[in-house]
Length: 100
Image 1 (cartoon, one colour):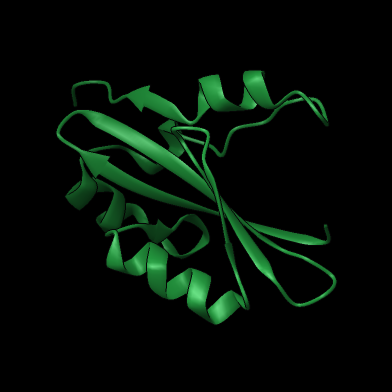
Image 2 (cartoon, one colour; image 1 turned 120 degrees about the vertical axis):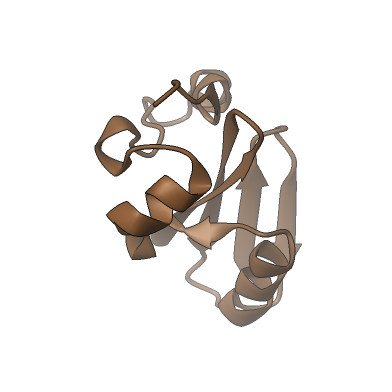
């Protein structure tokens, strides 16, 4: 796997992450906070699926977007775990937003 992007969506006071990974063969995979991995034939179709589910690409979020979504931008960061430790990663992919 070569390239990954993090996406976010908020529901009430909860923030959920999804990881979009582009494989070397051109296929894409989306790992959602519930632990399911969905495969797509290309990055474009994966992005459309994320957008249809109201996810936003984290790298494109600014302070105003974050405020609209219910959090401060500097208070969240994409999940990080040791390579291969999917359980640890999944624990970090859902978080309760702090009151502002």
